[in-house]
Length: 249
Image (tube, rainbow, N blue to C red; front, top):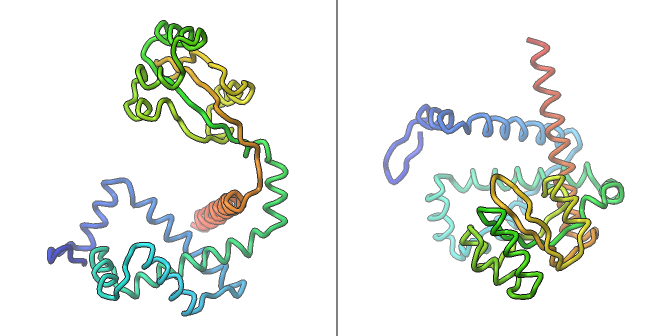
């Protein structure tokens, strides 16, 4: 049982709500994943010290602007957890990070990056989406004739208010973030060239590459690859255990 502003909520009510929200499987998987992490970490002698937990707790406190102990306790109370439960969560995160670093070190990540380097090329992409192909063609012609810029056209005609405000800015994408046909079109184009109209989900799209960002093994990408490899390993371990348990029953 927990209390939310002095209102009692029973455990079975929480369980029932998780089921109704289709969240129970997700939470159950996280429980099993943490079991695997703890088991393998113990086998490999990976531990976390109290000082490491305290250092991470202090970092999170300052990140959340919890400068006083009273602020921290008020925040924990609002999150419906105790200080001990918070520290247990920090411990789990640190154990996970240490295990990830132990399993997937520098040579593994550099090899993965080298074998999949093209996948890590990125493109800075702009997009205009309008309801009709005829309108998209007219906009494309006007841009090519320099009657209007791509950014002005996006601000005026795009169906998405957010993209209107950002003048068509869509974001920085990896090859695998885009649908295969769009990825092939985009990565074979030249910066500044108008691509399309392309019909996607019954709307007409005009695309423009502003910049290509070649793949580079930066510290951020190193961590991204490490997380990806660890998550794939964890999913494999979980499937193995689930299948093994299923075979025994």
